[in-house]
Length: 223
Image (cartoon, rainbow, N blue to C red; front, side, top):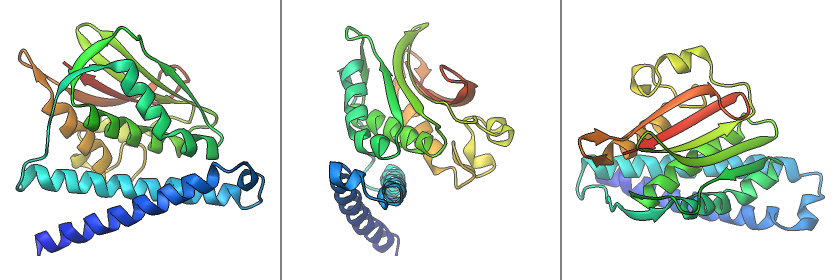
């Protein structure tokens, strides 16, 4: 039964990926951008991306606790390349919701991490931030006290107190890191962070308010 459910989730994930890709192609057309239906299509894309991201996280966590183990391949990466990859993947989503993305990354900064997993976590953080941002989102990476700190910040209203109260521990109240939903997004991000270990230190995630725009901030720290 578990294998059947996992296979079904995989098929739905593939379908949602096709739907999201089709919508992204339509929304990139300047003629479509002038149509009255454009805002509703942008909303459809946002929801399709969220469903697809959630299914990817579910399958990832299933593979982590099942067989085979979730693939983890850390390697030296240029942080600016990771930021550029995330920004490009989110380009249509951001443009269709008329939200600007500011990026900050030192081209000389390199770190060892699993690029695919980190890109997935940051992409999900941006998708969530789109729900609440007014005009701007920032994606930045920098070294801080021997850690690599990757931040997604928005100019929205910030996280409610109830969400901040279980910072980094979504299982305690079952809430997502930018909504009042299941908490799967933050849990998945935390699992990815904890896979990264170095010299007795382990990666982590946290949420806070403030940052560059005074709104919500998602922070991924890697050793």
